[in-house]
Image (cartoon, rainbow over all chains, first blue to last red; front, side, top):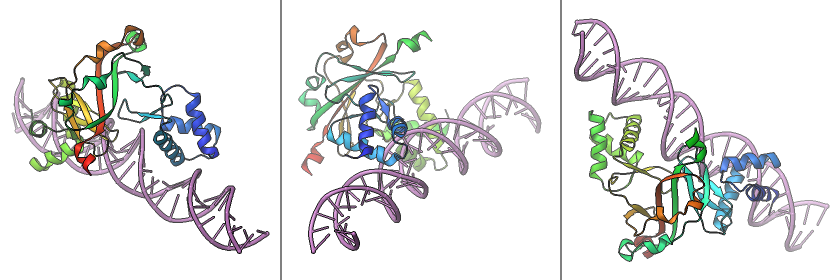
Length: 124
Length: 124
DNA sequence: CTCCATGCTGGACAACGTCTAAAGCAGTCA
DNA sequence: TGACTGCTTTAGACGTTGTCCAGCATGGAG
C-alpha cells in the first residue's frame, strides 16, 4: 500500500459516480500532484482484479470504474448525455438463458444495460 | 448507392459474424482496393442510423457491427478469446425494471451481455 | 459543355490505453 | 553502514480506434 494507491482508492471511495480513468487521474493529481497516468491505470487494473472495483463500458469511448462492486447491479444510461444510474431489476437474466442457447459455454456473468433518455435531456 | 457502399454492405451480408470496423475495411479493400477507411466508417455509421446494422461493444477495444439487426437478440461473449454468439434469452428484461428504478428516464432499449468461457478455451 | 452537389480519398488529428526504460525506495543481509 | 534485491513509480513513446477536413472525382441538371 503506497501513497499513490491510497489516493486512487480514496478518489473512488469518495465519489459515488462512475468515473473514467482520466477523471480518476485528474482527481488523484489534485491530492498528489506527482502521480502519473500509468500508475493510475495500473492501480485501477489491480483493483479490478481484486474485485474491489468494477469496469463498466457503457459507451465505447472510455472505460468507467464503479466502486459499488459488492452489490450486484446493472446500469441505466442516457443515450444523449451519457449519465449513468445504478439500477436493480427484478428477475434473474442468468436463469433466462436456456441450456440450448449456451453453446457449451460456461456462463458466469450477465451485464444488463438499459438505454433511454434522462429527464434532463427530455426537458431540453 | 455507390460501389463503395455496395461493397461494405456485401461484406456485412456475407459474413455472419461480428466484425470490427477495421475488419470490415480489410475485407472491403480485398474487393475494392482503393476504398478508404473514412468511407467505411461513414458507411457503417449510415447503416447503423438506417437500422440495417447494429453496433455492439462487447469489449472496449473496438465497436463491432452485427448484420442481424432485424431480429432482436443478445450476446454471449467468451471472456478469454472474445468469441461472440447471438443468443435469445426467454423473458423480457424491460419488464424487469420497475418504475421506481427508472428515475424518470424514458427507457427504450436493453442490451444483455452474457460472459463466460467457450468450449474451446475451456479445453485449452 | 459547364455547374453544382454529393461522395470519396488520404492524411492529419484526437482520445484512450499500454508498454518500457530508467529512477526511486524500501527492506535484507553481511 | 553499505551493497544488494525486488517492487513501484515515472515520463514519455507508442499503438489502436475513431473522427475530421480539404481537395478531388463523378454524375446529373440546365
